[in-house]
Image (cartoon, rainbow, N blue to C red; front, side):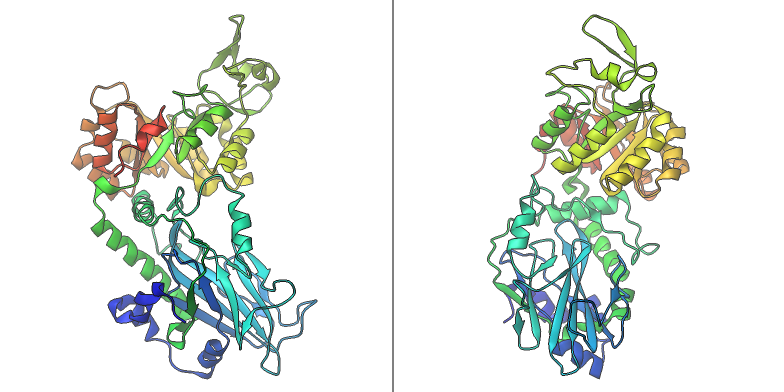
Length: 493
């Protein structure tokens, strides 16, 4: 049975790029074997992104996978399993995951010398799992049946896996977080796909329109037909072409005024909670922020803490300079509502729990190494931006953590921020013009065009004036900081 979501796949002539790929796959004995054992995939009734094409690789002996990016050996004689004489690896391509542009999931089918399927495995959020449920594979003849996670496409032998995983998150990956990862840049695409801030913005803008909630009715069934199968090297060659084609289409079809900009809570949510506190981070998340901006400095005993000013004043009026005070001394001070100065580790753990990105401003160049290390420990490199008014700090951080996006903050309207950002290998320019009466008028079309030509993005000062927020959206900037992040939701159609 073919589900309704497969209309575009069943008519590849409507998609010349897909047609050209499928035309490269000749009828061979290997393709016939791949078709004979191809899995059957159950999709949610609301799933917007079915698989389009499948790259296959046959194994007659144990060997490394050519397509699973985490690296693995396809082992025909794995301990605890019946010995297989052949394995088939299926690299299953969808143009979209609800969180990012393009998805590649994997299924492995193991067959014994009698032609019987004896083992099945599939990918699960970067890991690999046995597809037995209660000790058995679900087989329809020679075809292993499995379920695809709504929007995310990870595979499981039962829908219960997806429901259990969903309970781990406070915000829905298929609606509130749609498009949050932008363009997925993996080793397959490096050097061939840029992944600029504008690319990420276009992807998020598109996927925000595709947000949905699962029905948990797995009624769309995909049978992988021979016409969908191509040798893995052909799919590998095609993938960056496909991604770049999508980015070209999105740039043509989405006007700047429809860009889904980043909603960034300033110092957490400064209008609602004490600045740079864990309560502020949590409040930013509940108000719909995508990221929370906070400032970091180092204490006298080497702890990285969230604080904006050079010192804190206690209830008795005594000033405690951050760089000359210990963490214990600083945490004895009530910041309001019982909040204490948090460490960077505490902040990143909170952001992780709240599914909130971190926009970290380096107030202290001594914190550069600690911030890079912490982001690596918390696997936050892809969900964070690190910025500073200090060019040296931005340059040093980028050298330590090249995968993390960076920004250069500036207050003057007279410097060449674009040239400065390029010299620092920064991703964003960040004008801080909140004290000016009509700062959006300074972002001229000519200046914005120069920013985009340099493959840079634009994040703007903290803004609480609805008219200015609306004007910034019309210009198609990449992010806005606000003490009141809830104001950033109102401008979107």
